[in-house]
Length: 103
Image 1 (tube, rainbow, N blue to C red):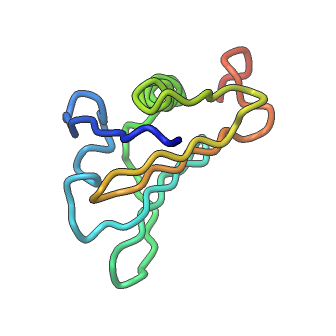
Image 2: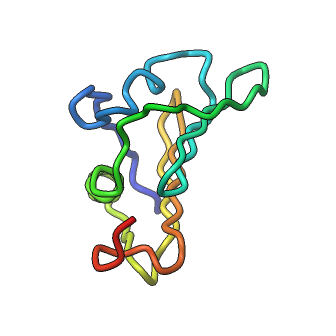
Image 3: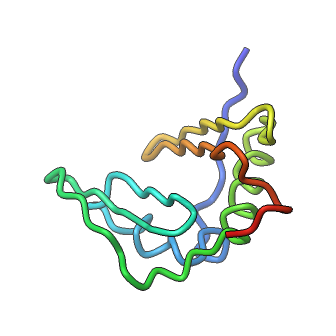
């Protein structure tokens, strides 16, 4: 039985992603470890040049989400899916991405 998950969308938890989370026109936020890409409701994809997202932030953020939905997220369990009424969160940890391998 799946547990009902609800957490508050608090700007402090979403850091540099908050402005995109708050924007109703943004449908997807993608970060590949270096580049941040956003997609809007018109299916336009744009690279964000100065985003402020770091690998350290993504690590903390993904663990925050995992803890809130009581799901594992690690090297073995490297896909995290969490849903809300208004939005879904899918986080995929790329192979070889761990705390000992920065950048």
